[in-house]
Image 1 (tube, one colour):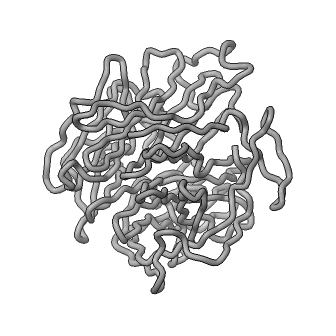
Image 2 (spheres, one colour; image 1 turned 90 degrees about the horizontal axis):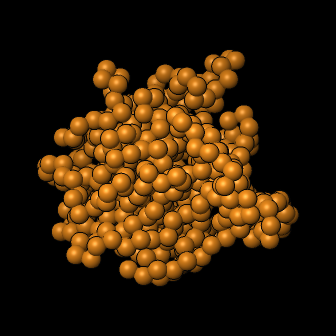
Length: 425
């Protein structure tokens, strides 16, 4: 686990940032009861919205100023949806449908980021043409005993995570499917069974327990794909995983053969304190994502962050409107955000306005540490990201320890995460 050092902004624009003109944000529409996840392509912004009357989630889009329900059946959890282009360049979305939904099904206010996809089963990849097409299963993707989920698409190529539900350890594998070329297995994140102890003395829980570290597993909760990179949110849970038995990372892999790198990682503390990356969007050869925290001393605890694996550098910016960011997505020259306005805290409520429950609920979310709040879809143009110094770490020779460096104490990287790999398309 990495503890992010305090950021220090230095002069100079980030690669791909707008060099002239001030950044601007325009509120587009309120999105009540939307999941705090966004994806966008070709002028379409796609998200999941909770319907209290039917107690399920609808797949929605915003396009040309209009919010519409997409012509697909709802599901009991937010959609693992990703927008991109098909082989002809037309805007489409891909997502899974499962015989057994990930853990958290039946709890509509559960944060989609924390759905346990290791315990989903019978999942298959589907594609929908956003310009009026019908839902179609991607029949070329699938294998006996496999459960495929959290897909991403770019020019008809689809990346996805695969879990074999009969396996004793449900460790996700990552594949890239290219029409006419079949499947290529890519490098996944760290497994939950690290030496020297491994997982020999553990047992699976029945029924599954999403917080049980004696049930070793690893899964992908979100994925993004572009021409040059693939990015994904990776969670590993097990008895020998650092930081309370769970590691959650944002991983980026260069598809031209460069090394896999950890762009960011989560840190969880007591009393609802945390810092974590989310909403990954591959943009060319970089990864844009949301960074959020509920640590003391942060007046605005969310930021746009861009990581370049080629230069191993980060750039960041707060929202020009000063809003808290609940989700982000990039589409050409526009960066869309879900701007969150928390309700005022009630005296003695014990909730945190920044501790988001994964849904834009106007009412307090019981058990999620949220006072509730509202969300607006916002279009951000001319976003200017400034280079920053962050993520200074060392590779630990042994167990995870805390070591000082020039910016203060940070966690060094454990052997579990010390990995570099290459592959080619």
